[in-house]
Length: 463
Image (cartoon, one colour):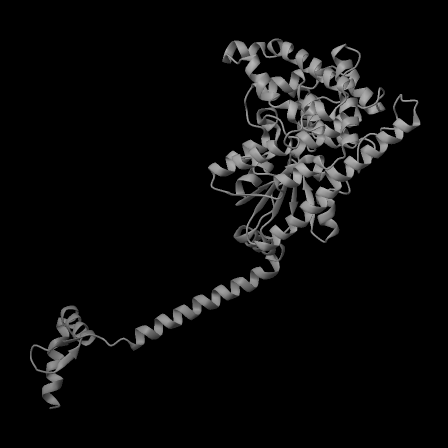
């Protein structure tokens, strides 16, 4: 589900009323052209655009917040330390393994109503007719929205529409609500590019680098989060979402927060401001709407609380428990968890839950170096220790070196003393003579020949 479906639900819930919070009104006043890469680069502080956390242990464990958009929209703005953390990891974990075709097929099946039941059977006739009208409007707009893509790649708008709305008449109301959120001009253009989203791109890179892939949720668990909503709540949310898009179609209202704005805030590091602008545990208060009916406001508030609990808090608890189990099972391997960024924000996030259990986890800024581990860590500690105690230990080390040299010299001398000298035979007798004596005698004869007669005389006299 990652950030695409989870956050999309929240964005749509935020828009159920006619009025929005002060923060959302501020976003509406900004031109969409301001949400570009250039405006992000002009920021004085780029330290916040990091969605990387580290669990301090040897080796470390990394947590990276993703966003479900084409990777080209955000890849150039992901800090280098986040990319290095992904590269050094041996095991990489996602919410779901989207490279597994069986998971994709199971996901499509779970979106569908029980066999033999269609959408028109569970919706009021008027609402079903409104949905058909809105989808017909989208189908007519596709050729205009993807004009450039159609010109350069030959993309067929009709085929794209069939792919996006495949089997919509058999889907559950809550999934139709999500489908309407995807059918906007900016989202359609991103889909038309055919590029993998950030999560899928990381999976492909992990496979090409022969990393071990894993998931911490199953398809059934993710589907159950939305499918277990009772039919009345799902229809209520779908009706409010459809009303919003009908007003957008007539030009009466805009989306409070668009996908383009989400990408901007993800790249520029203030995504938390968008997701949790009023509370650390949720989003804008739905009670601040133009509805005069207190019953409707209360119904919206209860729906918001239910979705908040199911989409984030309960899932965060389960994922934190499984992450702790995975980390403890293989403590000697570097791990990288790439999950939706919404699961790492707020006091009830995965990070907050693990920290409350005693794990030492901190956020890494864009300029922070990755923690050292293994041999590099030991070498660094040794260098720091030498630097700290260099003057104190310098003389001791010099004395040790002097003693070691002296000991080596003594050993060499002993070896020389023990070694037996070579011998040669005397030419005038059979007894061997030391080589040293023969050399000394011959040198004496050659160097002092005038004394030879005296030696001979003495020997004769005293013999």
